[in-house]
Length: 135
Image 1: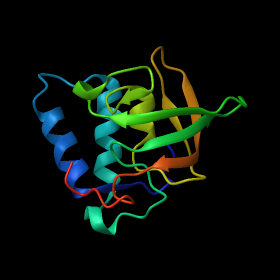
Image 2: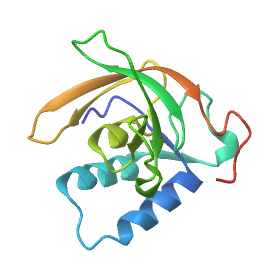
Image 3: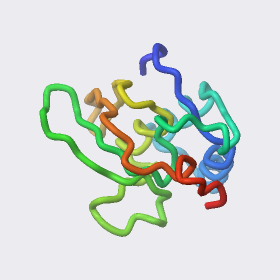
Image 4: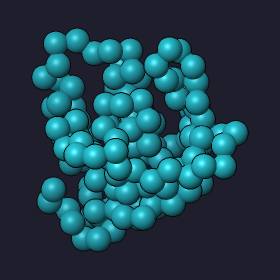
């Protein structure tokens, strides 16, 4: 993973993700990478979160390098995945999205050991930007 990108996570998201991970018997290699990213994250109170950063329950437009296809997904907790429009924080793509800002790119390991670089195009909805701090 690139150390060039600063990632920003809210205290609320950090606490909830950490609690979910602590409840798992073992961490997969993908979740170990998420844990590494969380360890290096800048942590802010939800009210201080920049409005261009992907947080939990944000709806994000992104694309993979080498592709013109722009995808739109909502980053959710594992139990909140309701449709193909949702991506779990515990899925490789979900882990890669958290904490990135519009315009940032990140190479992230995918199942099978391949690296894919994704780029944040836009944040359609961010709870903190909408004043929703208690989710």
